[in-house]
Amino acid sequence: MRLTVIGTGYLGAVHAVCMADIGHDVLGVDVDAEKIKALAEGRAPFYEPGFDDLLTRALASGRLRFTTNLRDAAAHGEVHFLCVGTPQRKDGGAADLHHVDAVVDGLAPHLTARCLVVGKSTVPVGTTSRLTDRIAGLVPTGVRAEVAWNPEFLREGFAIEDTLRPDRLVVGVTSPNADATLRSLYAPILAAGVPYISTDPNTAELVKVAANSFLATKISFINAMAEVCDAAGADVVTLAEAIGHDTRIGRRFLRAGLGFGGGCLPKDIRAFAARAHELGVGPAVAFLLQVDEINQRQRTRTVALARRMVGGTLTGRRVAVLGATFKPNSDDVRDSPALAVASSLHQEGADVRVHDPVGAKNARLAHPQLHCGSDLLAACQGADIVLHLTEWDQYGEVDPAELARVVDEPLLIDARNALPHDEWRAAGWTVRALGRPTPS
Ligand code: NAD
Image (cartoon, rainbow, N blue to C red):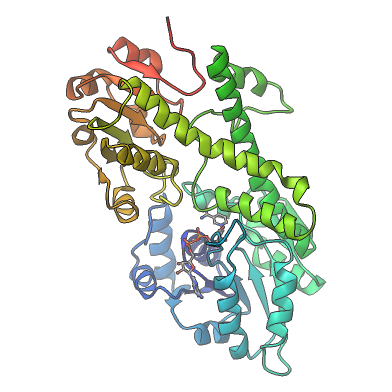
């Protein structure tokens, strides 16, 4: 099938290479000429495991090309995927849909044949219906463009696997024809037995924000328990393990720590709360505002713990921060909890050295005031305290005895509850973590 993928960021670029990989003829489109040039030359504009190989293979197959021109897209696609960003509006929690609208406005007047426009971006419920009206007013006479929504659930760090072998595919359609087109487009993926849920667009749009709201709530729930554990002298790791054995609860997403960030969960729950308010059901999801607040509080709790551990003031203290990205196996620093903490420490007068294996460049662009690099020992040299803020595998492999020789004070905050605390303590470190009692 001839597909276009409009918006070639983390979501769109991965979708484009994966669609080419399963046999479609794909044209990737973006307004960012540099990104398009890099992709066309086989250079990944971001770090994502497995992406580079798939990009090289897709380009070599001749089934993947890139352009900045929406006219070319209009002429190419039987199906147009919308993958542009839907960031948080500057004036509140709602989603900013101007990129989505700009694509529709730029594409629709150039369409010449019947086609399907399929949104993958995360949008407020009602967007498909609004775009259907918008497109109808812009397409040339006689041309029919149907809109469907096919929300994306991929996780950065596992994006290729999640696209080619997703837990489920959800499509929101208004006609059997659109449903048949999407079933046929995804046939190679569905052949492995992936569940396919076909529903109306409103439900499909809601599925995505409901899933993210549930995950965010699970994380903030365990972080709320961590706060209670701190006050009561209890251990949140044991608590999480014990409740997680209950299959109704499950063990995943119950690791207490610094909380969630990134380009999706925080803005998605705020946008959902804002949309629910518009629909007159704000109170039904008001708890999401508290989920957000609990999440933000873990950042201030981590800074407060660091301040206490270095003796009451961070001014002039050398702090090593391990991790800059919002999660491991990604170079994405959007709304990164690690960088939020690093930034607060810097504001309190600390001399902060951030280490990240792949995210240092993006971290420097986002926070030019911070020292960010990819040499771990250099970041820790002379440190008064070390903060583990993003759980990259390599931090789990650090030799705590070797690191103890480099720092000034062997003080560690494991804000991800992911390091082997006993080993670090045996090597002379004082280790603290959110929701864990201090050993006597
Ligand atoms: P991103 O910022 O990495 O990519 C968006 C891309 O759209 C950019 O390359 C930008 O240049 C391009 N763009 C903006 N306006 C355009 C226009 N008018 N025409 C063509 N291209 C345009 O964002 P992302 O992380 O890929 O997220 C995109 C959407 O997917 C968001 O709604 C997000 O919530 C959703 N989503 C993201 C993920 C993820 O893990 N990143 C997962 C699921 C859903």
